[in-house]
Amino acid sequence: MERLCIAKSPIDCITFSKAVSQVITEADRGAEFKYVVTPNVDHIVRSFHDEHLQSIYKNAFLSLCDSRVFAFLARLKGYPIKEVVTGSDLTERVVDNLSAVEKKITIIGGSECEIKTIKRKYGIAELFHYNPPMGFIFKEEEVNRCVEFVVNHPSDLVFLAVGSPQQERLAYRISLDSRSRGLGLCIGASFRFLAGTEKRAPKYLSDIGLEWLFRLWNDPKRLWRRYFRDLYIFYLMIFRVRRYR
Image 1 (cartoon, rainbow, N blue to C red):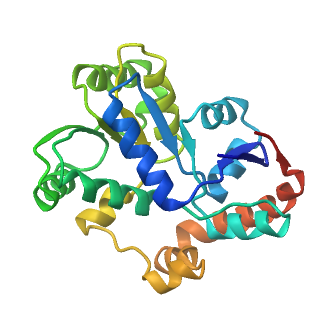
Image 2 (image 1 turned 120 degrees about the vertical axis):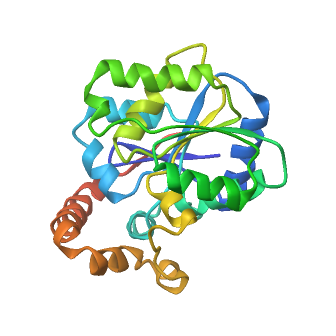
């Protein structure tokens, strides 16, 4: 598997099915904690001037492209991103797999109602849940509480649903504790989609790379400035693409 570095962020050249297979295989191993990230344009722009975030992405077990705009621009530069692997699609496929096998899972983030819905909907037998308070990432004692929860509830899969970059920073902190086990997935709002509390873009829009437009249409006041700023900055940054293995 080839790993590209695009604007200082790593992207693994891997198909969706191979990514799912690697996630499930690694979860079965029960080895020391590793984590999966799915950077999109916003994540890349944010980490471009943040060396700590760059290190977090580079230390990920998998770093998967979560943006069709990102993939399109990279391909224009001749870099072989095989498929877009969104965090939401990956989460849905992995959770679907959980209903067929007995797996322990731990979830950090998400409301109690959403987690109960997912547990019932997918028939998950063993599920441990902790929802940290807002702004937890800036309080050492709260971050430690999250780490201890993961350590004290060893699971095959650990879903981190506290938004970016909080979930990536937390994943890295968990990985530094040698007592932690399992594979962590940084999933953002994916459980809201699975629980039905938030609508995802129709598949035909996602397939042509316009899922961002659906989100912008539904929440323009919050997103328009960020989206257009990020796209402009990313367009400038894409010229710094380089390869490494």
